[in-house]
Length: 402
Image (cartoon, rainbow, N blue to C red; front, side, top):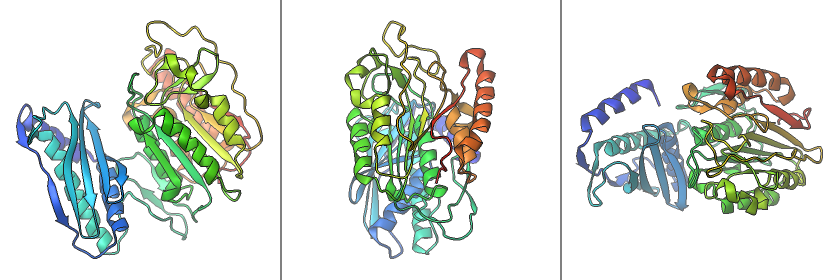
């Protein structure tokens, strides 16, 4: 979101502080130009993402859009119904906005919804005129690579020369947890990685599975990892990205923590053990598997707080086992390192430097790893000696990214 827009929102928020306004709903707004429903959906997604909203499909013709602001204190959620002829925006939910349960809500809600509506109209106009919508690549150009910037993300993505219809990506980012402290910018970094996979790796949008926050439950994580087994194609690659809490289990193994579980019960979910995930992915019938883990496994959050309730985890993590020659794994740090946020970029620190390097079209991970490692180490130490973070690379270090 641009600086001008943030200043505008800040001023409007100050103006409406403590005041209730009638909820802005938009019913049956006409789509001016002839286009099919999928094109309308693409335009709405483009508008939402460029303004900081995150969308989720409910069913064909209906999606949910959600936005958080003011350090994740305030939330607005809307339902967006759409067809080839019109669209509708209606209130769905909110947090800390003094909603009276009927028709009135804090004025800040309307500011965001009104901006969303204006951006949808803009994107629909672009789509109807035959121009590509912004910030939502539905295809990858086959011409020579061109640099394209994405609104709201601190990267410039080099465009892929061709699509990779046989490759798939699973992208997971959990900022808000049901029972644990947050992992700041994990969801925004996940969305940035999804853009990287589409625009630079050349993976079609429909081949990229994205789970953020409450979507990333234990059941969904297991289901989507299993789905990769069904989608795996011997002509393509698999890419997995995870940003969120990683924890040591009571059995000494390391786990990824889903939205709906606590650290002290994670040992009950063996399918989310890293050893088991890596073993499953190594057996996929694909050319290569690349895994990017922006997580620490120390049992602490970004600020040093304990993920285990009341006691520090006096657990030693076993060395993760990597089998086969298909896997290449980059992690945010060693098992005892912090995985830091990067507030100035509104991203995770490891993810920022990883995506920034790969967005230029480099395919040799072993070549860019020293640069990523050096920059993350230096930036983490600038936060304090206790925040030291040194990314690691494991598995087959020689295979090309795509």
